[in-house]
Image (tube, rainbow, N blue to C red):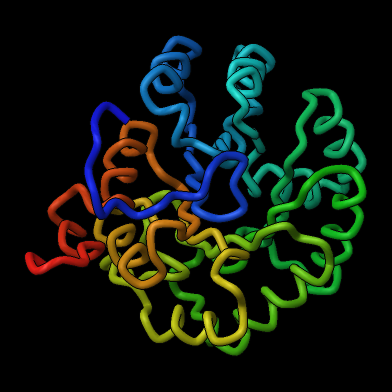
Length: 256
């Protein structure tokens, strides 16, 4: 840091198991990636190449190398996994992961109807090859999953070999964990946390108000995902109580 401030929350150090910031790359140019890493690389843990953008991106190998050289793990969005599976190309998907040297993969069923035991089977198979992130929740705003079901799905997927489970919100933050307005389904989150350790969950939270809510509930080292590249440093200041939204949350003196 550039100077000293007291009463700043202690952040987990990289490589982190908690306090992860997962960034959504929706098609940044190589130069844009380099610019993001120059300013924010220290605060980025994982980058998701959104949905199936990796299929059409023209310089994919070069982009992945830039991230990996910076010590940042990269993975393809879960929609790409689903696109391979629905076409009976799962083995091809595994070969693609090897071709691009990826160490992370996302297993999701947000767009594809898939029996849960089959999803867990995919998690088991992929976990023999890479570190698996599994996403829970639907991209369909009309599909409401009750809290007990979220807990069951997360528990089963962690047991199947997922490193972390991702709470679905999409890039817009208005499905899954959130209402269409972007408001957090607070009862759902509270219920999930009675059974699933917070450090095992990456909460997709693209909107600032959502990030603030999770940080106030679980602290600076909550795992947050689907963060826009230009929001990484603002998010870090929220984590540290250095933005108005969390300014007094971490203070422990008479000014609090």
